[in-house]
Image (cartoon, rainbow, N blue to C red; front, side):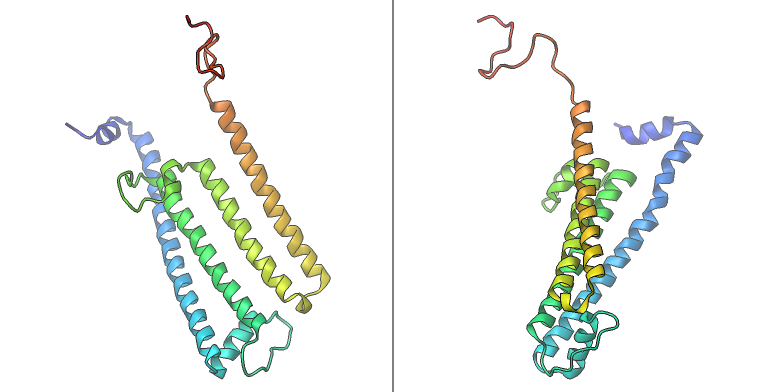
Length: 219
């Protein structure tokens, strides 16, 4: 029996077929994001290695992590061992890398599944739970939620090292984070309204009462 997808593609007129096949132009973009994911993995291990080496007294590694967490224009600490604040800022930076990596995975897998081609992972044991019901609206909400998490990490890093920033910087970072939060709430509310409007309404006289019996049905 021929594949219905192949049969459907064969029956398409030339111009619609070319337009439909143009979705594969996005494939190099997702492959590029995979390369970016590999760069983040390398960056994570470099930062983690420097943190471990600094904890064991390596002064070069300590200088590397202190420089990484020191805001521009501020003098770097000259301590011989990493302080608790420096360790916390480095760990938050590692968490930030992980969350951005999660965001990349959602964009790569969810975007490919939604806009390029089905992966057919329905029976795969490692299929992500969210991928079973992903669509453009769900993907937007999840991406907005991930961006809020990343913004929260950056805001927390700023507040931990608040003495190194002026009030204007603290205020604007807080305002930007609140803007992300309100934007995500607006996206989620819009998606819920659209799903409610798209839901089919029950036929007249067939509403389901609390007892489970349909109105108008015989006793």
